[in-house]
Length: 175
Image (cartoon, rainbow, N blue to C red):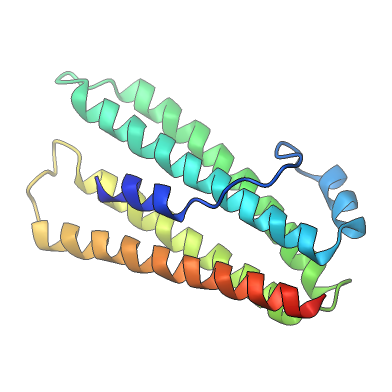
């Protein structure tokens, strides 16, 4: 499906560092991190999100090929795992945004991060709707709407790439 290929294209190479920390310890690390390190962390989180999208797409593909009868419990488990990964990434992105908006006094960078978060929410909701519409019960219902949703995913991913470029460029200017 188009979302897997597009997610892979939007993946940013991971930056070395701790990718499992969330919560208070990570906020303490943010206070001492350079702006460049905060931006690198955003890119790493984007790579993690791309990987989560790939897992979601693969889980959906396995679900569709499992039936009938369909293995919904397995798909539900995959969705749960991916949801947790997205939630953890979102918490950390919001922590970086707060650090940039507050103590770092970098409102432009914070606005890029906020926009990125909004776009990722749109992308996830659209991909989820596409998967729902792709279930056997709804297949073939509205191919025009499916096409429009696929185009929305592509345009959202293009906007994400632009925001990431703006973030990188403006962060270099801020240092």
